[in-house]
Image (cartoon, rainbow over all chains, first blue to last red; front, side):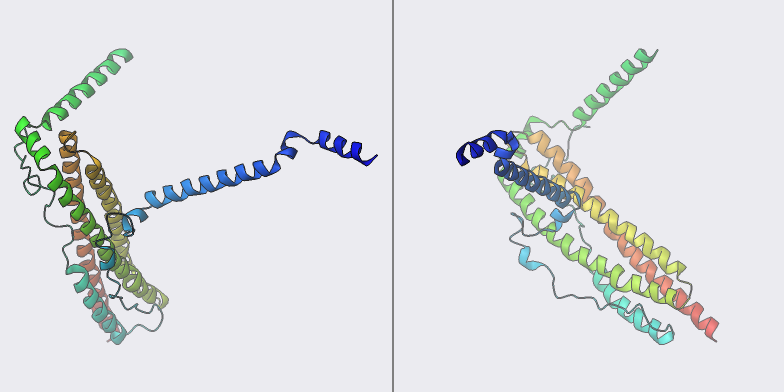
Length: 124
Length: 172
């Protein structure tokens, strides 16, 4: 008497009841794919990609990131008097000198003349 | 009337495109030079791409620290002591804006340089040349942003100096 009952229960199962594992796997893969796409979009749109020196093409410079130059943080708390302002200006002047020491992105390395194909006389 | 205006707009657009295409057209000799030097140019661009990325990371850290570790805490300290921090706050706000522009312009420049590196200069020398010219303009903008940041750094120092003078005068 038990066997017909089992058969009847199996017949009552819907398509999704029978494929629950497959459905779970498909949903899991879709969620993972969606999260990956969103992450990659955020990675590229936010400018993080430009700071990621572990990318291919940056290996030659990835170990040259300056990790030693830590700026001492000025405390936001405490009294303000001539000494505390002078302490700040001393700290600020030191860091300002370091910040301005490099005239970054100067020069014209993308000038056609520099790039050896000298096409500065483009018809205009 | 609407159709006539639309037709005129399309015509003007096509003319402008034609003028643009003419302005960037290269002679056969120039195209050949780009093809001949393709490998060495790509190598130079790759080196520049890497060295500029390192520069962006290192300078970016310094510029960000100037605001977050020095300017912001000093402004907060003045505020906490109920002192007038308006002048220094205005400069800090301008500095933050310039820093955002620097980040944004560097991103545009890096994307343009990357697309130039991806172009096959033996097959598409004109497109390669145009993309490099665009990257060159964008790199120049990044340099302008650096100059602006340096100017804001000086302005902030001046604002602090002015604050100190006023503070001393009022303390006497």
